[in-house]
Image 1: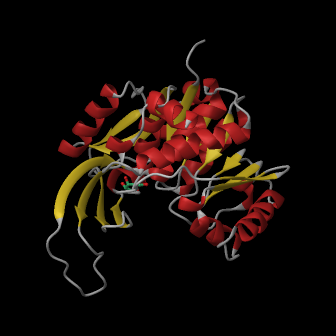
Image 2: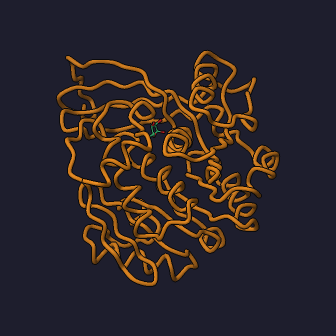
Image 3: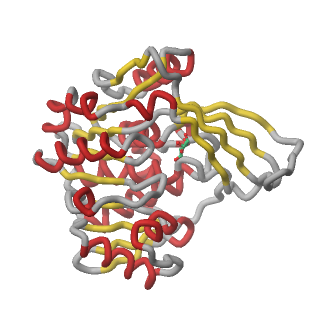
Length: 305
Ligand code: RIB
């Protein structure tokens, strides 16, 4: 069987990370941290996750013409990702994320998007052939909304499925939501999209139903350690795998990349979300976003336990 085809349209960042006992509060200096740098960016993380989980993966993105962009490109090639539709931007720097992680693995992130903000609808149009042949096209919101809209429009006109991970959270037009087969907000993003409080499975169900009322095919609300809730024709709770989390950065991206692969393979939604949840849990057990994306072998193994 040939590998399923996934196209990811999105951002690429270099993550500058400091881990320390506590996260700094406004006006506070926290000393005693440890620094590391890792490849990141929601789109790039999802592309690496999809490739490691077994898909033929194409990544559509913009990188700066600098050492961070060059390193990222080299990385994607090592990960066997198709880089034919990556644009090198001569005017804007590569995206950078500053990240703080505490001893519980919780984080705060601030992103300077640089070239990511300049990924244009025309850049996406150049990847039309890949999108039209994709089993799944996956997007997030770390790029301009008009670019996401164009990618969704193209992907929904093709035969494949459309997954939108609405992160970072923002309000979205219903014309966009109506074209999405699978929407994957976390609790905060679901609350932002629906103006409802989302803090329990029941509340997540209400938010999911509201989004389905706007035309979304299925809503999968990720709830961290509390698992994920699928709101489709029926409602199903998928418990989270129990792991020792050291760093949750990129866990959502691992979930989405793996979900794209499982859907592209034609799995039932429940099984696809179980596969995605296993990938998300594994990503929490290691430091760094892209370095922590699990292999297919690891996901299959944890699925058996
Ligand atoms: O989802 C995690 C990612 O968000 C990090 O890698 C960081 O780059 C930010 O984009």
